[in-house]
Image (cartoon, rainbow, N blue to C red):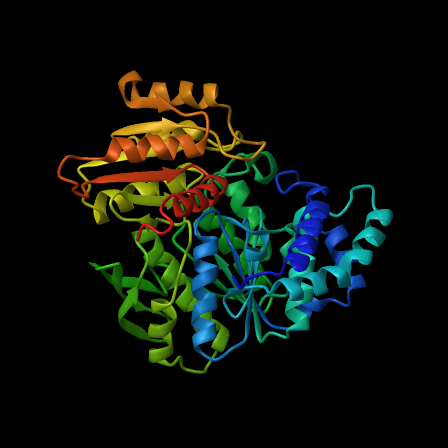
Amino acid sequence: MSAISPEDQERIDAIEKALNKRWPENKIEPSLERIDALVDALGSPQLTYPTIHIGGTNGKTSTARMIDSLLFEMGLRTGRFTSPHLESFLERITINGQPIDAKAFIFSYNDIAAYLDFIDSKFDVPISYFEAMTALAFAAFAEHPIDVGVIEVGMGGEWDATNVVKADVSVIMPVDLDHQEYLGETIAEIAATKAGIIKEGGFVVLAEQKPEAAVELLKKAATLGVEIAREGIEYEIESRTLAVGGQLLTIRTPKDRYEDIFLPLHGKHQASNAAAALVAVEAFFGDQELDPEAVMAGFAAAQSPGRCEILHRDPTVIIDAAHNPHGAKALRQTIENEFAFDEVIGIFAALGDKDVEAALIELEKVMNSIIVTVNSSPRSLKLAEIEKIALRVFGADRVFTADTLEEAIDKAIKDSVRPLGDDSVGILITGSVVTVGQARALVRRRFAGNK
């Protein structure tokens, strides 16, 4: 992100403060009424460019970033909207793969601010933080202007604020249990809500799904008569081999076969994300063939901060935003299969509304010890509660506590020191996007100038 002047930073901070006074992202009133009214008042900026819309439970952000990278390498001006953010809320809105310029963000906010207050006055429930950010992204993209929007669903699908787009291509990543208080108690119910982003006349890419999710998604696709590409049927990963710094993939799509794609990301789940991204971009271009060199370049440039990201070597510090059992399982498999640590010291802080026990049961298989702590979110699970769960899963001799994430990192780094200075100990920090966002800043600061 480019340097921000003190004056602009002051204004950005004021905007963030104003937005944070709105309904938080975890508080939902399931309806498109307010966002419909807001974008209508703004002149429907989200309809001024074609869109690829990405939903599902896990893998949305990584897939969105890969789609963005591919489209940019193919010469298109891209706008990407993802959530939540790791360190700065400006990360949520990107133009051509880079976080929005502070001045452009301020301009777009000033453009929509009066409309936010106007819509607030019309409804019993005010515009939420997420609805405001979504409208701001749509307006910024129209102002730029962009050739294509890559829009990640916030929560669910059917009544998510992003679902006022008319997507040319919808992508639904694996559906699993999460946000049950809003989306439904079963995978089938959650899938039915997430299927709400499928649009008549569009194209839908379905990553590998559990059978009960697949039934709901296919039912919706059949009702709307959309074209469909399913992982394992219309497209597949033909081969995946580990490579230095990532993996090499061969992907068969409905129209072509792409060999020896280098993806600088770890994990089988990232290969699946890459395959879905490639099929989505292929569908977006229709009959036009993709330039294989642009495909290679797009994947080679792909980044996914906070997703099995190696922040430092000696000791090796890895952060991963796994915040539910499905994400924890993918992380566990990646650590088991793609890293060769003799010992892994875990650091874990989660939000209070997550299935922490199921996530820890997965992580226990790869963590030799765990330091439980809290993150900066007011929704962070209390230390006493997280310790109680960890003790049940790991046993007393493997669980340690730290009052803050910084103290946990300090302890893990001290505990990782070995007499011969070898790199056989890994430090794995996970449990929440908030946790890894904080950890990113703390680890960088700790090792600044120590390259």
